[in-house]
Length: 85
Image (cartoon, rainbow, N blue to C red; front, side, top):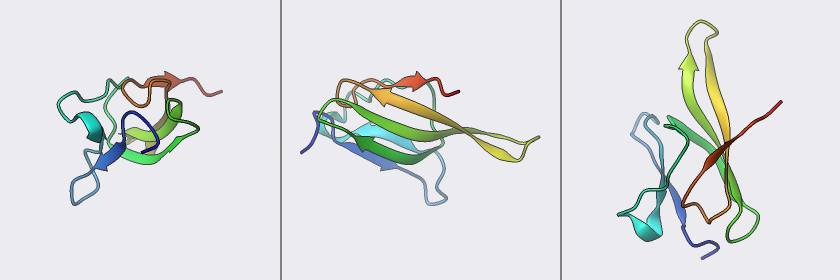
């Protein structure tokens, strides 16, 4: 296993309500900066440092997904927003 918290993505059959889950510790869900409706990508550079590109909502006026970049430095136990731009 690459990291203290092995990550998984739980989605409904329609692909909504995605959730980052810590499979190694299912009783303690990771702390995230908000709710993700879809997990687009998750990757780790080592056992502790990783990033996730998530869809955090949908802008109906722009007809576009709202995306966020999250980062972890503790193997996936906690995630924080990364400011882009």
